[in-house]
Image 1: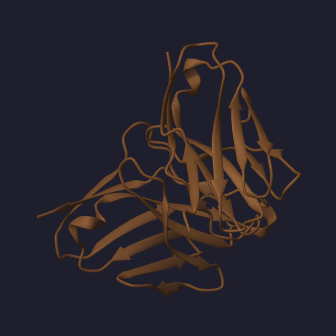
Image 2 (image 1 turned 120 degrees about the horizontal axis):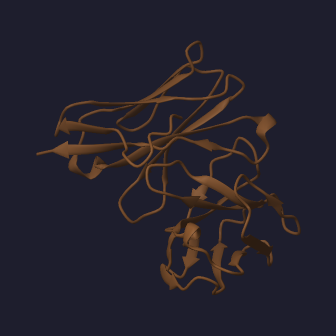
Length: 113
Length: 113
């Protein structure tokens, strides 16, 4: 993920609209990806994962899309709710990395009433 | 199940003081991790323990030591705290290292003055 220093990218979305959060990952050898949600003052919480043999995976109100050609991952949240306001970040790893996940810095999602 | 628990939640240290951050998990996971999170940056791995009895350095191990006390507990020690170690520290666990979801604790906010 891109290091944006002290200022996280922010996405502001109207309540009820769909949100799309993007992540550019760094290593073409990565074969497992996770999206985490982190609310203020809390630890990261697993949302959804995807392996590199898939290009789309759906959960409850969330969809992850993987484009290996351009090393891009996106998280779509349907009918965004106030409780979705948080920082979202992606993490990538590979069996070849062993213990190492590489975490992006995140995007702050603000849901407007 | 409590998941991953961490103590303390907050700590203020003076430069040169020492302290130990405690972490425990009740999910019977083999692997445990310590990360630090600095503003606007992704999580960075300090140390990890792939299984009981083993520990290894991550990306930013300098100034830290760890102990895998048993399968449940993994502690992080700062022997001589420095202002650069001001951060939020997260403990995580996973079934194994590699392409497995990591579960995070609530974090310890440490300030070194």
